[in-house]
Image 1 (tube, rainbow, N blue to C red):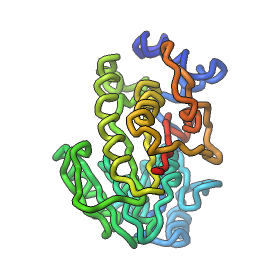
Image 2 (spheres, one colour):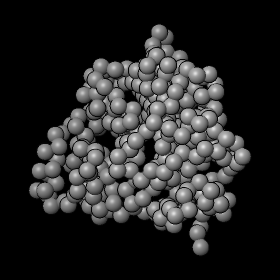
Image 3 (cartoon, one colour):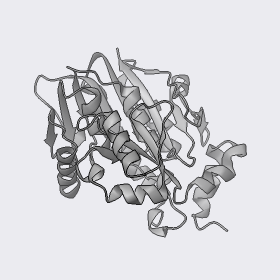
Amino acid sequence: MSLFPEQFLQRLDAIIPAEDGKDVLASLSPKEQWSVRINLLKAAKSTVLDILRKNQIPFQEHPVFDEVLTVSAQERQRLLQSDLIKEGKVYFQNLSSIAAVKILDPKPGEAVLDLCAAPGSKTSLIAAMMNSQGRIVAIEPVPSRFYKLKSVLGILGVINVECKRFDGRRYRPKDLLFDKVLVDAPCSSEGRFDTNDPETFAYWSLRKIKEMQKKQKGLLLRGCQLLKPGGTLVYSTCTFAPEENEGVIDWVLRKMDGAVHPEHIQITGAPVYPALKEWKNKKYNSLVSACARIRPDRLWDAFFIAKLQRL
């Protein structure tokens, strides 16, 4: 018998393809495999691989993300105590989180806004993909998370970032629009529920989903407004809830009145399934089908990703 709330399970049955239901529930438990990203701001891939081999730490190279390795849960514990972690040469980051930044595709010399930046996983990957060339503005309103963000970016050697303690919904820079915007929004975190840790789902409720949706709408609208014409915004969450995913994209398409357009997303190697066309008798804009859902498995977290272009 599952410990998860019955209402959550009923909703999940209506969201996930029937043939995947058991596998999804099985994935919501401690992972046996972990992805670790080589931080190219601090070390070359060849250097890290040599160190791992010298210390007899088994790993596998990821077939799609060149700077990513996978290790067992046991080897993860060894790595967490290693100089590679302490010196910021490697960083544990889930494949779904990495995929969101790869889809954003930040380039050297661009101006990039990370509107929900803590703890810095995606911000640091953005910096690495930009080769520290260009400008990153990283926003985080919560003091403890803000200082965690600054600490992580310092350890990982990110130098082209301005950290601002601010509510992203109210961020109004003077005379500045961005080439790329990432809105990795706070959410109900259903994709991170853990059968072994009741605290991960103790506060789940439909009220919580509604509360998160309100924040998400404000953040996404602000992000769209701060995009240059032709610019790209990626919106992501780690939850299954359609209200926080397709529902938010459907809302912003109406709010922006044709000024943003969803682009089709393809994530090579990821266990994806289609975005929902409707939920609770509400049909979504047909353009929402361009978005992608990632089904959780032994390596990938549950994720929703949307890519919007400013027209």
